Length: 267
Ligand SMILES: Nc1ncnc2c1ncn2[C@@H]1O[C@H](COP(=O)(O)OP(=O)(O)OP(=O)(O)O)[C@@H](O)[C@H]1O
Image (spheres, rainbow, N blue to C red):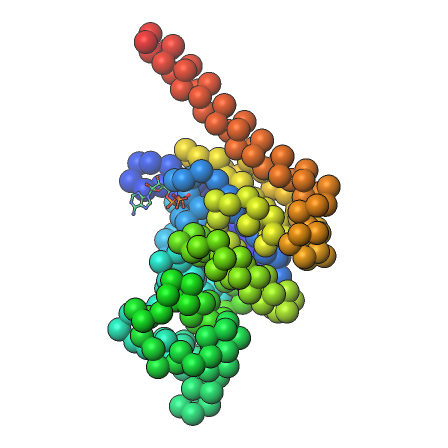
């Protein structure tokens, strides 16, 4: 379980996140939405232990996060692979760390099976630059899955993909999450509300300047239907209204504040 208690975060004097209280249960697929610059990636960096909160505390399974965290693996939009290593070597590196008792042959077989899982069988000896964007992102997902961490942090992982590859990878990640049950928690940043509704069992919306949680919605039916049927459900249609409404009210609030400041300043 991940607990964020009253998290504040600033860069220099600029407050990026303010008062984030968020508990995430094992097995959740939490999608984070919000305008550009509202601090979504910053929260992922805090969860991964790559930054530390200015105030508040993050705990994973009861332990405070105070450095790069072994519970988390990360997939970014720009394909988180080492470009100087083959796809296979990218995976075996993660696997050697995860399974120090396995020999080279066993680790290689395991890496090949992860590549197979994401539809990349046969790409073990290829370098990332020889793969298409969609293939690189599959390999990055395979590497994240190969690490023993139960928490997968995904930062707009499909943002650079064409619609067909995007849909295929959504399917892949959704199935992998469903099959892992409570063993895999996913925290997924996206700008795409429909992607969040298809993948997420819970959707959180951040306000901007500073980032605060302005909506927190459960999506109880996300795993019950295929894509076409899901988007016909009244619950999903309601969320398709509710989520943009949260964005709109945040924007109106900020515009109102700005005009208050202007009027106060006599402009
Ligand atoms: N290293 C840094 N130094 C100073 N400010 C930073 C740094 N990294 C990010 N910021 C600022 O922090 C704020 C939040 O950035 P972050 O990347 O978390 O936003 P985001 O919601 O993920 O945005 P996007 O949707 O565009 O990816 C932005 O205003 C950004 O300019």
